Length: 310
Image (cartoon, rainbow, N blue to C red; front, side, top):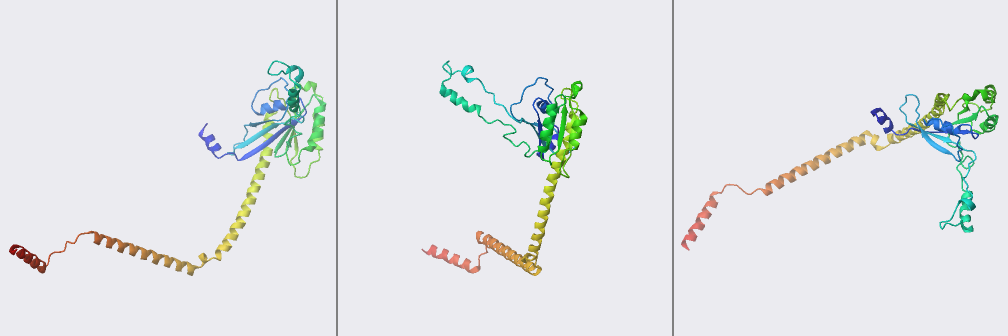
């Protein structure tokens, strides 16, 4: 990783953005989900049984902000994979499962599936990619039914997929655009956008990446507004603290000067006491080296005479 990226990621993640992919079955949701991750197109249709979530690489232009983008491949109604227990499963001893064993597996049939019926997929979402197949009119009916259910504050891009199969087209562009333009949305809500794509050859993917700028900018604005609100509250609190501090003794100059003078005298007294203690200790440790007096000499000579007489 280069130094520029290291410095960028050292700051941590500034924004978490959630993008929801929604649409009828067999419209290319999983293909779009894979394409946004940078994976190649897979022409084999594999039904998705429950919601899938992945993080994709995306950043807003040349900003240094680190944005974590979670993409949700949403399934409206999940499916459990249920086997024929009476024929396919066997017990460990080689025989068929007993009735008691069947009861144990019965609970698996009612297991919860992670789908749109179990999870509110729009909770915390910042953008929605609602996909349809231009060769299947019923997928456009799904858009007509489900698009009004999207919370109005969330930006939506209607993705008309399979543009490479234009010769089999059954959903005219004008019909889809007219529905979107006449869709009732509250004032000051982001408009619904429309784009045609082909997951097979990558047509329209760049437009989708640019569309992600819109939910990001709305998320950024919301974050900045919250920061401004916190800033205003902190400023008000600081003004109150200044007013309270102005009335304390610390802002009375006479008391402040008196306190400084007292501290200075205390400091000088302690310094003088420490100097005196050091001098006393120094004089008490050294031996007495003063010269002998004449009387001391006479006493010493007398003591010597008495010792000789004895």
